[in-house]
Image 1 (cartoon, rainbow, N blue to C red):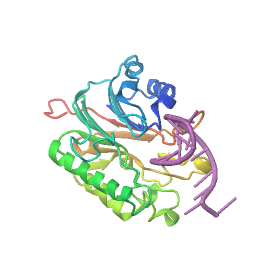
Image 2 (image 1 turned 45 degrees about the vertical axis):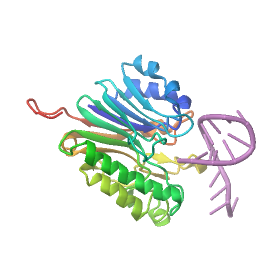
Image 3 (image 1 turned 135 degrees about the vertical axis):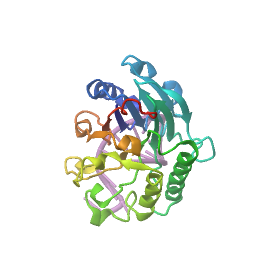
Image 4 (image 1 turned 90 degrees about the vertical axis):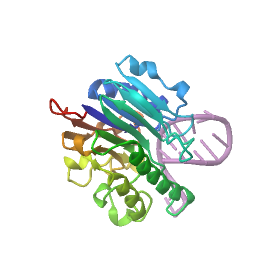
Length: 264
DNA sequence: ATGGTTGCGAAGCAA
């Protein structure tokens, strides 16, 4: 199973690029973030034509998340079913081919110490609680998307300058670590140890060409999936060319469970 | 040098 995640920074502005990429990369499951669409405007038919079922959670101008699947799409749940991010449209879960998939768009946090920063930390805590309540780490579970945190210093282009600023603070990393401690593994780092491998580059100042980015888009796998993860990639080509998103897609491949397995 | 760019939507906000 190929699972991918991509913050597209407006699906309306990026639809042709996304469908073109899907035809090439052929993910079985694709999680999108920052669609910036209301549910009524979500182009489900364009994905249906490619063989994908889809679910979307968005209310218009900001945020918006989706799950697309060509291996089934069941038990869709939007948001937290509670006050946490009730209107934020930053979380969507669905079961795809026996895997519980969560498309997440963690709040940016803006400046360190701001009210938005505190909300970001609370959002991570709510995500951890949701996993505790709804899921079992012994099952095949994926949490993927834009987490707006660089997990390690090797995930930012200039740690000396950036550690302590937003996306690169101990508080944000601890909040992300608490989610991972539920039982999730950063799939990309199973296959790539090198620094300098990013998923986001600022539009400003030629950051992409200067290789000034951060790895803030993650595919987190529960252990049964992590054990069978054979490959991971950031598709940097999608940050190039006409009207790219400021994020590149991340892909992972997971082998099917062994015959006779009860899970998956 | 609090700059720079993009998207939405039609000015300013968010990232």
